Length: 196
Image (tube, rainbow, N blue to C red; front, side, top):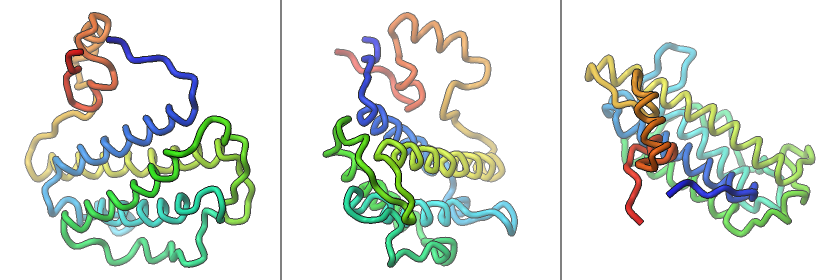
């Protein structure tokens, strides 16, 4: 079954947020515990720090999304880059808590809400602009998580399971998608298409 075409920005955005959440989780799942807390150099952030920052941003941006400024007065952004979670369990809990803010805010929205105005740091944004801003921000940080996880996993374990189309497999995946065996989405999520 082919992926359904959609013209709903809200639904498509939720799907993209779900994709980036899953991509980050798949990268972190492959990484050894020590890789979650290691920085590549003194100017880089560890995966744990990136997750802490994302969770802080998610709480600030999405809590009371339509009614309060996206930069909450009690947020201490600088502290998000200090004192990382110490265990994988703490990191996962923080990750899940942050994403819950995102999905709880998006769930009740409809495309009719897209032109409503919200503020971030007192600057006006349409709901659509605010969603796009956060999609880009989270994609950026998930890309960092994937890069660090892959680099340190290969160093530690000597192997990495591709989170996308593996090298040299493009033609095979394209044929499988064209033949209805998998969808591009299930390929990226690392699962076979379920029978319907």
